[in-house]
Image (spheres, rainbow, N blue to C red):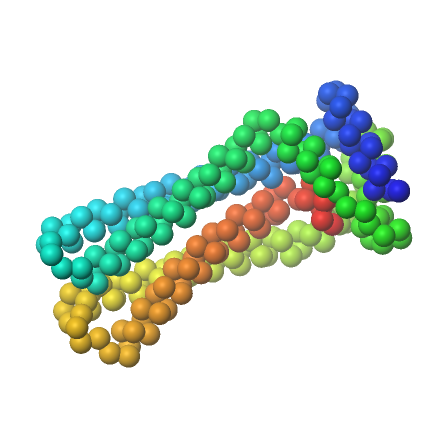
Length: 238
């Protein structure tokens, strides 16, 4: 029932088209900021992957001229890393573009968020949170109630450290992956046909660290969104 009241209040405020309610304005602005973070940070990563792809394909072109009729380890490496970087960069660019449209026109997405609100069990923490949001929105106050602020603080207590840790891990894995691939490329120029266990281990770890780096990009983006704009996220998920 409380969830229905919250949805009704939100739907009524949205349908009115009025932005005179400071509470709903705060909530919508936070929702916009949530997507803006992904546009800005995601756009930065798209640029990085574009530059990486250009570098790798440039290296592939240079290597192809040196070994026209031989598919060397160098050529395979530059092709593989370049192709993955391009595909991942394009997918990321698509996500950034979708979020950019939400920033420019937030109401369709925000309305979908309202429609997706679940039905918490009466007496649960989520039920109390919905009641707090409902009361706040009906009051139109500029001040976020202490109960909601406490829930936000509880989310930030783990979301911010997670964003920082994932960012540090991205740098570590990115640097380690770069070192491994550079080492393998140097060794391949000397004795590619005489690879031993060490080189094979380096290859496995090179692929693994590169894959983890891509995964960490997604984790960093998600946690930065929650760390910078937690209000709408707290309403939806606690």
